[in-house]
Length: 212
Image (tube, rainbow, N blue to C red; front, side):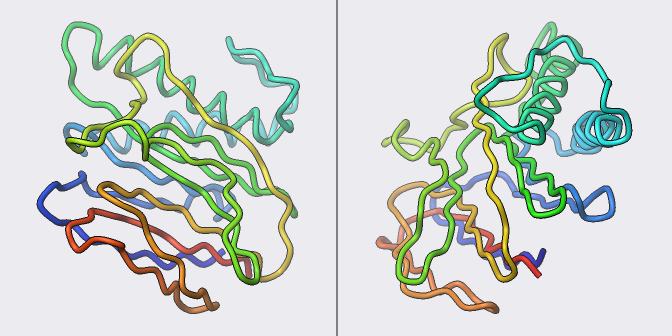
């Protein structure tokens, strides 16, 4: 998959959004750390270790149950975030807050792309003349100030959004984080996304994902 990323930081700024392509490009992790980015590698290790183990061993176990409404691959991405959340909540943030993460993990197996997400992220599938929303989280929660919507590792419970989609050649997905407005969709090609903010004061980040 190819990733084309754009962002704009205005008066209110989000922490840097990092993209990591791992496990022979089967896995992509999008991370926004609230706190020191020195913890990013540990988050990567926790998530990628479980996903690589789950792919190699179908009987790999975890303390978290599979959800019947999700595919096997989507369940694995969900559990990988739950394990990372559990680690950071019980270790780094046990006595005082050190770091929390907004994160979206994608994992591809053949023609299925599964995801799990925590925080201010929205995922849309690009159709011929419109965008089909696959999930949308965080845009309706804080009208006054830019704060993290939900964080891995910060509280005892965490809300994770999971799902999957079947891919065809040149399938395009749009992952966005927006504060202070919305992005107006004009057109998308294989090489660029023509998205415009409806307000000049908006803070936004987006990545156009194109299947090879």
